[in-house]
Amino acid sequence: MLLARTAVRSLPARTFALRAMSTSRPLGAAINTVTVFGAGLMGAGIVQVAAQNGLKVIMTDVSDAALDNGRNIITKSLTRIARKLHPESESSQQEVLRSTFANITTTTSAASAVENTDLVIEAIVENLETKQELFRRLDELAPKETIFASNTSSLSIKRIAETCSEERQTRFAGFHAFNPVPQMKLVEVVQADKTTDATRDALLELCKTMKKTPVNCKDTPGFIVNRLLVPYMLEAIRMVERGDASAEDIDTAMKLGAGLPMGPLELSDFVGLDTLSAIARGWREERVSTGELEAKSVEEVQILEKLLQEGKKGRKSGEGFFKY
Image (tube, rainbow, N blue to C red):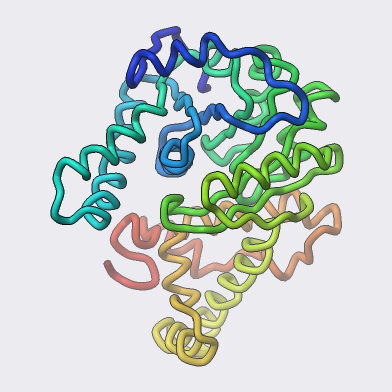
């Protein structure tokens, strides 16, 4: 779990000092300080974009090594951005990095990370029990006014929040950013049954501060994007399995016929075949029985499972439906 020892590192030191002196967040106040749990690609991306846009951010993970990895992800991303913005000026490029990192604090202490924060965004492993346990512990540590949000792409916000107090569940929502976060403009703000309109509105405003375009939706399977995208990708895979058309021809047809930048098989490889399979399996186990989804839309596809058994996970492993 992301609840570890109490080492705290500041970048620079005055950032933590400012956070430590802050007071509890009044109900309905604007979000100025954000804590992100998870320093992987998604977590680091959220940290970067928030810090770039003037928010104070605490990046939290279980170890210094994980935090160093997050810093490296942010540094590489910022360097690319800085070179595009200031191709002729190295000093201006360095200022982009300096000004962003001035807004970032890192810590392995969950208690320190949430003691005075306005918002907690969780971006850890896509596992319901793991997320529930994290939020259960944080509910005991964070001020009662703090908003909680999960960056899950496929799990139920209501289920994730149910280990928190009834009061906290009114300030619990989904904040689904898309990878790579610095480039992708969309954020799905997901409103569960108990999420108040004030919580939703605070997150919608945060998206605008981060220069993202938010959409608001209810806590349904896959929200908007994945609810449409996952069955679409699975059906394309079934077409390959049935021999209706080749992966190459299906992708060409959808790119040229529907104007899409990427075909469904290439997109499946990009997302990760393991991720796609896990989402479909989770929906079969959690959502079909409740009538939220039709079984056929997420039924198991043998060719997908065969590729995974062969270690072919898509772009991340060098091969999926295509070779990379």
